[in-house]
Length: 264
Image (cartoon, rainbow, N blue to C red; front, top):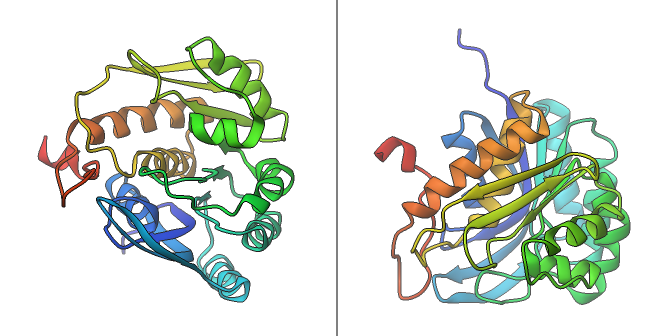
């Protein structure tokens, strides 16, 4: 009998268009050889043009999904994404405190199209409850500004951003510099070690789901026993290939291609 692969749990919202959220997380996990499981926090009506509606689930439903999976199947890593409200952020933070698996927190604030996915009154809960539970936090530059007030304009500013995020308690910060000019550069640091993750920028506008994909790839690497720097480098390589293979879908921004390795 074949043994089960490492198990990774995503706690995030559903993207009906399949490009981001739970759907992107599970595709990433499948591509990277781990067993993906999910706790759905919200349902969105979403396509290549934007988010047309979002409905969060009750905290009771989120708690029941988490306990159902963790208590029976177990997890080797957890990834969090869209949590929508202060109540859900606090519920998830409480649940994470009861597991010793590494946690990757993607502090989702806005969608690729600029749609708000986190209530303004939930920011403090993210800072004080969720980030301290993170093994790795993976904010993009908009989320850095939202959480810390630090505006990143140049590559050098990534250090200031990481320092501000680490002050809230995650063990590592992976600051995604994809919105800067030039190469796609991310900074992974625990405040002592620095790992600059560089890749050529691909001329491709179809990048929906990049943040979810990167965080899920990091969690998958951690579940397989990689160190944080090793998981970060492997995740960067995977998401860079997925962006390069991104494709048009609908009338707006298409998704990255999670299965690019099978087709390359």
